Image (cartoon, rainbow, N blue to C red; front, top):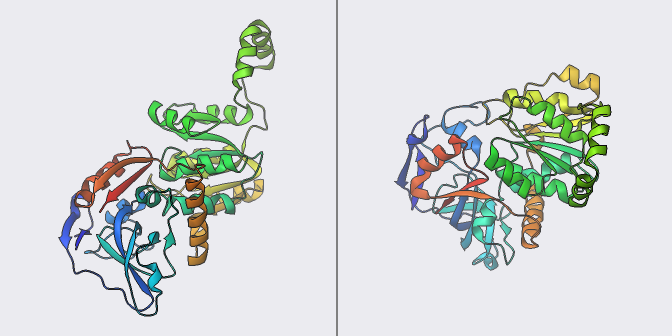
Length: 353
């Protein structure tokens, strides 16, 4: 079978297409014919040799951890009824045409959800749904999402809105800002603007006007202007996020921490900038802010399957739409990694096996 293999730590060019023996399902395993492989940013960082303490892989290795496909064979002790079922699954080495997985790992894909869409949910859907559960996002919460135009950010917007939260989405540039607004963000701030933190604070303190309110505003412009002059241009002192979901890390993530309300929740789970936001734990404790990190997003098999089934069901019902920004054939995995690292794409990059 064909697979994409990391030959050595380095840039995208170290990914090469190779021929490997077909895997054979062992006892308690299923064989999955891969239709599409999920990709996540951290796979590019591992390929570059980063985070070795957390990802102790050594080249040559096949990267990737999630697939969507069809079960074509089963090992000893596995119900033959699995054969022919469309599934998603966490696996080891997903950049390949065929993979094996414990029978406890796959989740059936419901009718009406195509396998490419399902692949886009393997990691990001589970993580997004689990993150909102852990941070207890609920009705009326003001939620600030950094990295809102990425694969997980686009899901977080929709899932947080479904929980009744008010979402302020932070993205970079006009195209990404337009996308997150289309997905339902109540307000959008562009992090490429120098005053984005103050804009975010203002957005957190002021609900976006409805169309009716905008129409009414046009008829009372003079009164509004006078009121604005009296009130000043600063957001209310209490303007802050009940929950900050930092999928970016680094300086941007750190700059968003002061936007967290006292007694709020701050999740530093993203590090595409090269590191997680280095939030001062003592300051967080003083302000009563509960901190979450990547360690809070390590789900057991049963929990991962529950969360997977949830996001697949939401997608089948039309309430959740993964955004796939680009597709690449398996043989062009190197180009896929280059595109991911280029940070110009929106949503997910999916490999077609």
